[in-house]
Length: 149
Image (cartoon, rainbow, N blue to C red; front, side, top):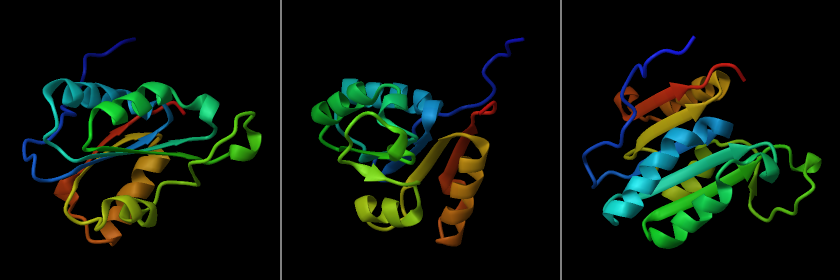
């Protein structure tokens, strides 16, 4: 069974507020279209993508994302791997899960940006709780849970 899209998951209108995308695995797909659009329109938003995968070989669209980062000067890509020991590829980037400390290291304060999350339900709920505990307003968190992991 296939259903129609059920919701709105689009970039906010206030270009003065950074957008922070938190993607787990194939949860990257909604953000890829937003990033492609931003590169097409031109730099206005400050965009951050934290993209978590088990291994580099599991990271869909990773090379395209690196290319988008080169073309969009206000876009920061932070890929992180959680099971690097099982990888056959070398990796020099971040490792471990996405958390408030990792976000703060790249964005500065966790309070202020608008957050968008897509990925496994456990990741979404865990990140939502961490952000709320750090003082992020509930209205500044948007999520799309990808069931079936």
